[in-house]
Length: 313
Image: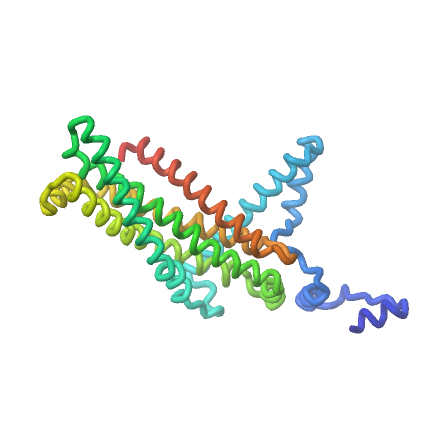
């Protein structure tokens, strides 16, 4: 109000002597606070240098900026996660229970249905195709390996992307639109410590647990369909399934669950915190978060599969 009154009367105000925290609060009050995706000085210099090398290509400039912001966000998230694991943010008094519940309990119904139907369909297709080759008795072994090693982790990633990423991206985008994130910065709280690190840690913990949950329902669906189609006794079908499985397949599925949870969390937090302030900002952030999460689940799945293939594991 004082600035507005002075501006009307042509009086100049010099706020350079104010403390940094006070100037930041004033920026928030003016609505001129830096956006969550604003680049720091070093980033701006690097972008300018890359722009000169690209001879002013606007498309390449946008790609370079997006890559720099993504790498900066990943680095900030990893640093915040490290601070949380080492207990250097105790003053925030964080409670992981809500984050774990949201990453676990809220996803269970959707995940159970997808895994159950996915296992049933996979068993149906495997028995049909192997029957044509006269190798139908191999179906339980093949289906079990695919479910434990691949299907359960993938459906977990997709369920988290559709259910968890959309909800959390919307929550974070609403906080950005309501200036709550700027208020955290104004009082000296790093949004990564309060908003990003708890969510990532919850997903790292719940990702493998959800994979085990999905594996149970996937195998349940495959056994139900396989017993009905192959006319095998349930104990024999289960024995063949158990004989095909090993610790190596289970470890690969658990690793994928942790990685998928991490990339889904990064996608949701990134687009949520970098949303705009317009009327359609929340919906746009949710859409980008879900699409990015699904894309990176598929990409990371291919990378992990190639790595274990290369390692002969």
